[in-house]
Length: 142
Length: 142
DNA sequence: TTGATTACTTTGTACTATACAACTACTTGT
DNA sequence: ACAAGTAGTTGTATAGTACAAAGTAATCAA
Image: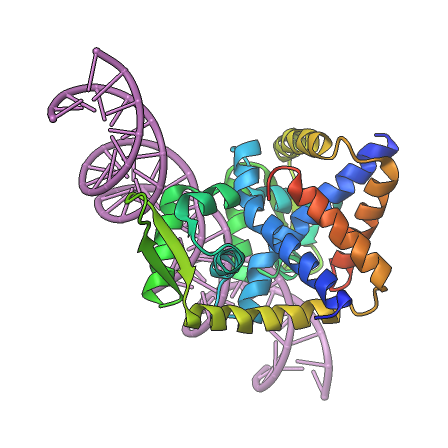
């Protein structure tokens, strides 16, 4: 295996290892909001008015899975579903005040964990790492 | 939010988004070996003779979860459990030939996907990215 | 304008991954 | 040799997920 493949292998392995721990890590950090709920809320915050279908595509999930997830979030009062005026097939999704608050609390806890974890990194490295991740995720449509 | 926090925020967000897609991505790439099974086999390959408890700690999973996972892998003939000679409470885990083969096949598929995805990165960037991931994961014990 | 087709979502069903608690089996330190 | 600790399994409950089928609304073609 050449040098390039070794780097790819490392990236593959480390990204995967991280992914594998993320759910449990989230559960420990903020037990009241699962990783799944957190990511959905977080996505809705930056893109209010998104459709269920868009979320499904983004997270590579089945539409039925998303339907149930947002159903649960709605029942918990964290989001609102509104039927779109122009197309009555569509439900547009919005964070409620409670949803925003729950999200903010979880985000603060997560931020603290990352600040701690990356505390000894200098700013240039953080920037480059962030840039690489954006580029990586952007590649297949983040 | 200062610059440093913005970089942290990006890292947090992008790592999380990636994690959220990894399971489904794996299911599409190699349906015959889930992300969970893949990571366990992969870990065993590099560290033959590992104990169930070690896997649980590494992946932040409950020992019962690991117990059932390795039970399933054993029933599928992908790994072997051997009682340790020096401590009869302990089961050490080994990849079987079949397990090695299944792992190799999935790894090849994954490698191809990463090669594709990162095809336009130059080698210096791949190296730095890999380095950052190692550093990041190493921080809390990978 | 209505019947077919398409688009978005929900529901029925089944399975996998997971946690927590209780238990069994073994080991170790005093 | 027994109390305390460690490794693993089993009972039970729940969340997350997929796939297939159905429901509902919009659009398009004749």
